[in-house]
Image (spheres, protein in one colour):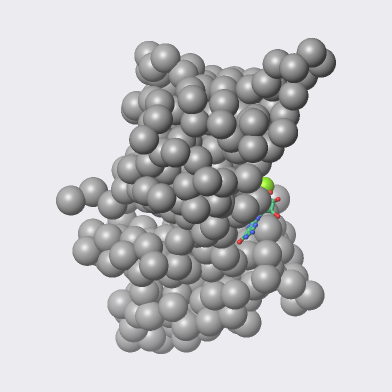
Amino acid sequence: MGENNNTSKTNINWYPGHMTKAVRMMEENIKLVDMVIEIIDARAPLSSRNPDIDKLALNKYRLVLMNKSDMSDKGENDKWIKYFEDKGIKCILVNSRSGQGVKNLDKTIKEICKEKIERDRKRGILKRSIKCMIVGIPNVGKSTFINSLSGKAKAATGNKPGVTKGKQWINVKNEFELLDTPGILWPKIEDEKTGVILALIGSVKDDILPFEELAYHLIGILKVKYPGLLNEKFGIDESKDPHIILEDYSKIRNLIKSGSELDISRGAKMLTDDFRSNKLGLLTLDIIPE
Ligand SMILES: Nc1nc2c(ncn2[C@@H]2O[C@H](COP(=O)(O)OP(=O)(O)O)[C@@H](O)[C@H]2O)c(=O)[nH]1
Ligand SMILES: [Mg+2]
């Protein structure tokens, strides 16, 4: 615990006290499952992960779901899938809101767990379903995914003999069972940029965010990752300093306070919202490591 050694300038505070309890509960719940399904945000496949999951999910089957893939850069999605698969982790794209990518999950899970299924079969156990647990940082879409997966067929199978008392399991096509309470991972903020990206994708409560700083960072990220975008969308001269760019943006958006002063702070919030609502396009903020 205590991963929040965030000494950066843009200090975003992540660590609500109840996290300790959440982590302890997850450690308990992980013992009950065969497989850990980690949900990440496709717009920030690195920043939205907590790599400590590798320790927490040791000796478990693994699957990574890149959720919100409807909002991310299509061209990058496949590169990220390859990035995870190079690490030996199966990764698939999902959109939990529409259900895209969720439908065939049972096949994927069976494929990943085929050794266990085979082992069970050799012992004459034919009907034991794979037990899975969803984990992820706040707001990646854990609840939406669970709802999408369970749909109308949602069937709690808890409190049956042999099923741990008090736990609710969602039975999916008699192939696997999903624990209905997801594990909440704490975001791992090791550098300023990770904190900024998490704030941009909306993983943290908005009322405590320094939007102006976020906007400057966003502009910086866009200049590197999507050069020409701000120019194309707003006719902004990107060679300028982020502070000037935010001023130009606020001018273009006609954000004037009483008097004739530019309302930079509204501009900052609006630019962030433009990113979040995909008005800047389908973008992925993280950069794939070499
Ligand atoms: N566009 C889009 N939005 C999603 C997707 N999955 C979840 N969301 C939205 O993301 C927000 C957080 O989702 P939620 O399931 O509450 O996240 P949780 O905190 O991980 O349980 C909600 O507004 C969802 O509607 C997705 O695949 N695409
Ligand atoms: Mg939730």
